[in-house]
Length: 287
Image 1 (cartoon, rainbow, N blue to C red):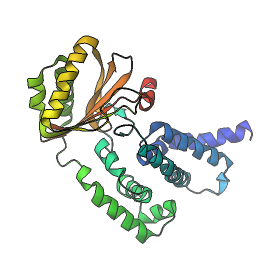
Image 2: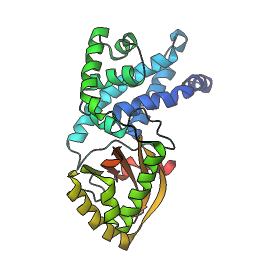
Image 3: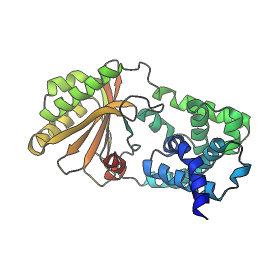
């Protein structure tokens, strides 16, 4: 293929790349896999008869979604053998503009691939069911049923009371300070009675291999961690929104990054999500 043809394909593809990455990431929960799917879509775009494509964005969205549906089959097998809790790769933004938060991403994991695609394309990206049907190659009525079933499953993951942005960031900063300096009284005041801690080390860095559930268990865990932090240190790198939730990035004693995201309900921290697996943090080094 000539450089001119490649350049022509890239000129029409590159403006759509961010949108395609958003679709792929929400389907897969992995930044690296999403980038692979989008790159594969570009290769197919270069080989396509582009003159016959009336709507490049729709064509490419269909291509990426179908590639992701195939990828989900192998991804599910990998997660069955994953060491410890699996969390999606963290996405860090300056504002809470994520249309799909971390708890919702986890809820999507419980759906079938087709339910996930129908829900995301219709409920998140706003496509009509006719377009959803053309994308996942099912009838519009079937797509409505898929989206409805998905909606029922993920309803509980939708935030009932959206925490005010600055309040969320203030809680994140206070949580970081209390958890690192061992102020258990301050930490206790922030936690809900049924708080849970979910840590993803992927077997590559130390992390709890089961969720830590309940106020007493989470507080005891952080009391032990505070002793470690006093000896080894933990540096705050960034405070912002991690996968749509208030949180922060830290540089830990082993020289690796870590993200912490806080799910806040009724002014209390209801869930703590920590990603330590270095494979899931590579893109943050680039940022």
